[in-house]
Length: 162
Image (cartoon, rainbow, N blue to C red; front, side, top):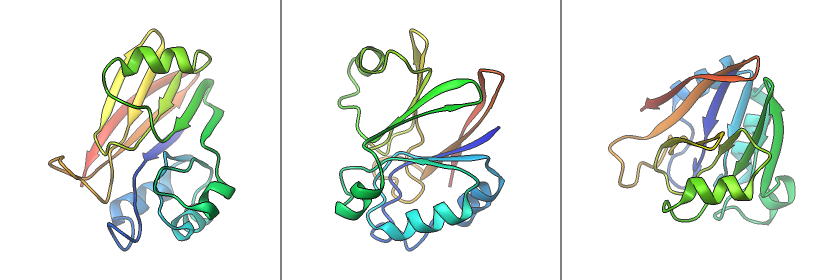
């Protein structure tokens, strides 16, 4: 299975739309994961229409309509792995340990909020933050991630620069 990982899109505040390479990946992905900060429901509507499968949560910049439609934490099985999606994980200090304790039943946790890409593993939990495809903040590039999952294994985790 091919996955596209997104977070912190902030459309239309930071960009009018997602960049074309991201939309190309949406079309190719079996699952699109979005870790919050949509800003308006318009992008959610479009991703729901254009994605084969969407797993998504709301973020701190998302208002009542997005919070009504999306969970704060999403849990799902993808390719034999137990996935979680959440927007905020707090400080980077001891993040791996805190998230392992908070989500003892997960294999992979996708998160956002910082706009800073992250890929670590701790005690059987892989933590992934794809950064932002529209708002690089203090990063040199806007980013997103792709990966593949098969037979209970996460593979080909790639950070893409825009």
